[in-house]
Length: 183
Image (tube, rainbow, N blue to C red; front, side, top):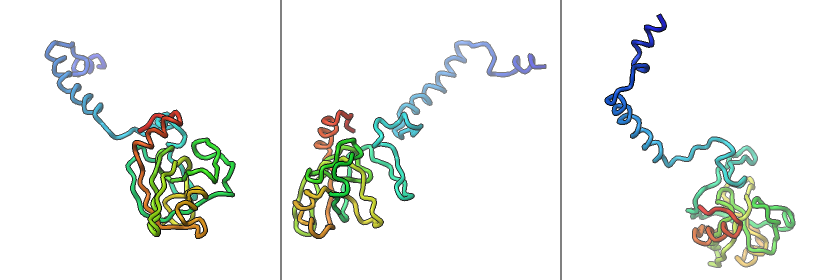
C-alpha cells in the first residue's frame, strides 16, 4: 500500500530531461526573486553588527535604530553634562561635557549632525555617539553636550527649538574613525 503511494506520487517519479527543465523554470525565478528582496531579515542577534544597532526599550517604549543616514527634524534640544560626565556612551567612548557631542534615540552611531538653533540662527556640527534623550516629553529630539549648548546659545535656559540634519558624508568618515562599517 505504501509502495503504491510512492509509485503514484509525482514527487518520486524518475527524472527526465523535460521534468528537470520544468523544475528549473519554476524554481529559478523564485530563487532570483528571493535574492532581490530588500527587506532586512531580523533573525536575532546575528543581524546587528554592533550592540548600538539593536532595538532597545526605555521606559516601556521600543526604539529601532536607523541603518541609514537620512534624517531631518525640528523639535526641542536639551543638554546634559555633570550627571553623565565620565560615564561611557553607547559607543563605549567616555562622555566629556566639554566636547561637541550629542545623543539621539535612533540615528546610527556614530553620526554627524548639523544642529541649528531656530531662535538665534546659530549652527554647529556635532558627533552623535550616545542614545537619548529619554525625558518624559516626546518633543525633545536631541541631547547635546554642555559645551554645545553654550555655543548654540541655550546653555543657561536648558532647552531650545532646533533643526537637526544628519550629514551622510561626515557620518561615514566618523564611522570609519570608530572602525565601524559605514551605511
